[in-house]
Image (cartoon, rainbow, N blue to C red):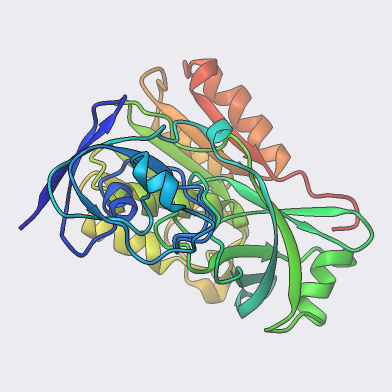
Length: 337
């Protein structure tokens, strides 16, 4: 048996199984309700039940009082439907609707993906989750007051751990620490989410252009889109120096095999003899230009080094791409990274 839930004031509707939380079912259906912890501790997901009956679930008394229940309020991260429902809650429509948090985190796992790329998985406190839009980033807050920014590589629906891809900048204060000193169980502080690099609603085909670890936020965006069954045509162009630098090459290859409207074009600029590379070579944005004489019907999402972003913006708009259809996240590496 399933129940139907209607969200007001948007009028959006989704179905929920009796053992699903309202928040979980809404997120699975592609509707971004606000949340903070997902376990009844913070109250960020609080909304009103306008019609129907819910099981309030297990939660902390301070997050939802008896008086609030009498007023019709519930915590949607804990509440489960016992009938069809009408609920009232403001959906998250843009980055401005998501609160920025400062949180401690633990380095849960580390894995070297390439000689100069380290994946970090961060664990937040048990009563916290970080709500974010796919494509956004977080800052590490260093003891001297400086910050280091890294894009989130995991999609929001897989937020038990936060995944980052860190490229080593030799001599860099923070990245030298990551590659030489950091170890699992270390405690850090982060702040976020930040950034406006996220997928806009549109029916236009989208071209994703990644340079190196610029793949990280694009991975989040695409994984989220595929999870929700988005049928929009997507093509990923991923540029790197050598084959080893395409550090998760198998993932977009698998996406291309599983999704008929997704294409993957890897491009190497300095392929080695041992790579036995027979694919595209040169600059990644030049591969886009070689494939598309007219970009007027597309949107472009580009992420990577500033030089690549600048060249892509200039050359793509010259090919007809509307200026407001170019979205970018330029990895302006901080001095002393």
